[in-house]
Image (cartoon, rainbow, N blue to C red; front, side, top):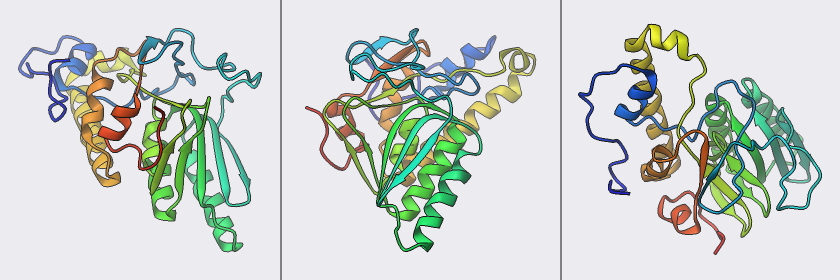
Amino acid sequence: MTRSQNDPRPAGAATPFHTVNGMLAAIGLVVFGYEFDSGKGPRPETPQVADAADLASGPDPESGSTDAMPVHLVIRVSGDEMSLRGHIAPGDAGRVALEIAARRRAGSPVARVTLDSTGGSLHDAILIGRVLRSAGVTTEVRDNDICFSACPYLFAGGAQRIVQAKARLGVHQSTDAEPDRDRQNPRKALSDLQSSEARVISYLDEMGVGPGMLQPALATPPDRIHVLSAEELSRYHLTTGPTRG
């Protein structure tokens, strides 16, 4: 890559915007591969950048598990630990917030949240991240689990953030839910994209995560996934605890 960590956005903002993809490239909107409506997420087969055509709707071949990734977010609580597994959909932030509040009222607050998710709703991932930060919980991605697309935003909400040795966090460019409509109104699309980018940067700053992590996401097409290395996780302050070597 030729851009610096502190300058994730590409040059050439004055280039005419003929397509939504052109606008994305010009303003550098990166939202961890936020999947607006697909209900699916990519799984890498090799370290770093991998083909995302084989989406993570089934079991992870590397984990030896036969459990398919849920198409809806499954919330489970055992003791002081909550697990969130599956696709993040609109409304899931409310479900998580209610569960955390109920546990706190019962005198058994959630202390740790484990993640295994293909991503999904960026809006809800950010809301959940703020709920988790308010509750002071630790977020963790465990061996053979994934956190792709919008999931890293949720992960960033942990007061302490741990990635185990064989866990994977992945980022890529955003996708577009309604390309036909947006092409008909490119000015509105550009305004929406810029507003979204500002919210992303603001959220990362709020969570203490470096905006430099947008750089590998911007450089990775939506049909591929960039698996963040241990060095990247540390450099962007995404982790506060042990990471894979």
